[in-house]
Image (tube, rainbow, N blue to C red; front, side):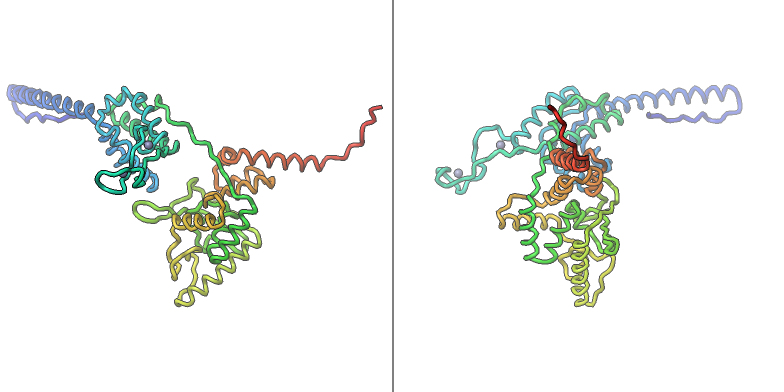
Length: 399
Ligand SMILES: [Zn+2]
Ligand SMILES: [Zn+2]
């Protein structure tokens, strides 16, 4: 709301008071005309706002964690801005579904948004030449992941609902736009034979690397959670590991953030794992002693620096794991260690709630969504357990 106040001058006599009031009234009317013009300009300004302007304003005040911010900024820059940046909001509101659904569909076909016609992406040599002979790189369509398109949808939804709150637009068109459906999780954990080969090979490379792979599988923890372990998180006496931080890469460098569910959790470990950790602790203590340093609660469990004052880079661990399994001829990725943990436990008949607790899933539903196929085998194990506890029946005499 725009407003201004006009003071009425003090006066002694009635005529003087009347005059003062008349003058103030005149002045107020002048101001009113000016304010109305200002309000009109503001309204036009608002309706003239573009999707790009809205996103800029929304991102400036929207509170999100640094990793999500980095993803959003990249998606706005690469995909949304070129497509919708200049589109006036009034137009966008009217045609949101018509504009977005084909756009989403094209992204799902090709993240480069190509026309679908075959073309050469990069020529090996300049001037006239035969691309087939020269071996120029032809474009191959790569679909943009459904979850990434859903993230673009989330950005636009968030910005539009803010625009409604701010009075920029009268309604949010996004609920009527259909994003691609949620991708079905498809865990493909290594078999236990493959797991044995992987752990052995990692161990042969280095004890710390072997322990990292081992612990990832035993804890079923996320990559960032294992990387973020400090010695104060590990209770060798009680056989417990505390997972409460997640190490992630952001545009500002590396930083610790709470785990996804923002819950601290304790995960039990077995005696052999305790022993491996104890050995590693001794190795670390010896490593630090060479530099005249002592191991503290804040010392990282996994570190590449001699003074162990910096955790390992998560991305480089994923690459290292990729090289390791490639050498073994096993088709898997680091993330599958977590799936391995979950599926092995479920197959062994451990109940869903316990598995969900170890994985740090808020409740069993996420676990169920990911591992429905293995929950079935847990159920079969349960069936044979109860079957084994039933009394043996005497054969019924049917004669
Ligand atoms: Zn060429
Ligand atoms: Zn393409």
